[in-house]
Image (cartoon, rainbow, N blue to C red; front, side):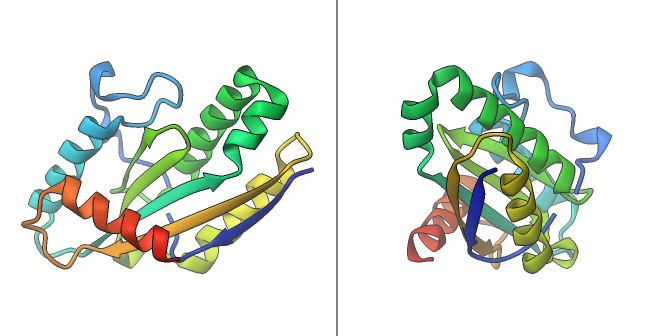
Length: 166
């Protein structure tokens, strides 16, 4: 089985039924939100919950290209779709998640519902149980949304910067 090494911080569960955007806002491969749908959903979460703090968790699957090259694009697509399902399963209610591109994922999670250690443990457990013997490295960047007036794209960029510094 695979081995995961996750570096970063924080933890989530399942999206609320009111978070059912149209197909145009969805990533066809994973079923998660696409970038535009995610940015709209983040804005909605922040506007509807002005007294709640949220964080962005930006994840990158290091070595995904190697996996794709070794096992083929279909296996890579199956992996990405499975990662999308796993993310939905571990996100807390009131969260949103997206695949931004290739192997880059992002979630917006209420800060009071996020536990970094549990999130990383869930990622490790999932990757260790993945039915292909391959070692993945998961890097996470965490951005606490301290200025909800910022554009969601800028917030996402800050989470990506945190990932690159992890």
